[in-house]
Structures are given as C-alpha cells and as structure tokens.
Length: 172
Image (cartoon, rainbow, N blue to C red; front, side):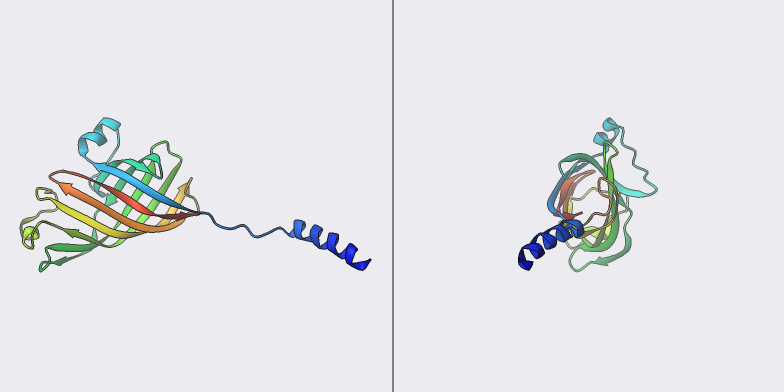
C-alpha cells in the first residue's frame, strides 16, 4: 500500500518541480547582395565612417540588412595574395524585430593573384576577391535576445558588388 501512495506523490512532485528546459538549436542561412544601388532603393542607411560594406537580403529566412564594420588588426599575407583580419558584422531584421552582432575572427580575403593587394586601396573594389570566415554571435536583441551561434561566412566580390552569406547554427 505504501508503494501506491509513493507513486502519485512522486508524480505530483515531478510536475511541481518541472523539467529543465532545453535550448533549441536551428540551422541558419543567409543570402546578401552588397550593391550600393540596392541599399539606396530600399532606403537602407550605410554610414561609411563606421561600415566597410553594407548589404541587403535575407537572414534566417527573413528580410535583413548586413553591415560589416571596418576591419581591425589587418595582417597581410602577400605570399598568398590574401589579407587576414578581424571584423564585426551587425545583422538587422528589416521589420525591426531583432538584431545580431557577429564576430568574424581571422576572415581571409583573397584576390586573383599574389600581387593584387600591392596596389589595392581601402575604397577600391576593382579586382575580384573572396572573403571566408568563421563567425560567432557576440550579442543579440529582440528576436535574437539570448541567442548564441557559430558558422561560416563566404562572400564573392567583383568590382563594387558582392554576394554571399552565412551557414551556421543558432541556439536560443
């Protein structure tokens, strides 16, 4: 008889205490076009004193703007024709419901040949190049409050236009 009383008591105690909630993880992808004309057509502000490039597209299936800050701690690797740098990207949902701050550590920017960086300027995108990096979420607000995540980022450039995006996992 004691067993029968114990089982309902344990069940009630379990319901009162509850079970710990588990974080949910979801794959995230994005697609951005980094073209000034598109930004202007959408009324997107890109403060060139803060941001190196800005793009418009989708993040996590929702309309978004990507703003990539000027690189910090740039290191040139001339023997490979690549520059290695760290930067921060701010991804803002167009409807204003959320924002993510993403760190790109050791982003690798590579051109078509080993000498292309010798004549490049900070404001010239004349030669084609590509940028790849791993990223980590460092802050979030709104729909991305308390979100963490990691992934990869890849963008291709030609002239003043670029396109690419993110692949990764977000956990909330």
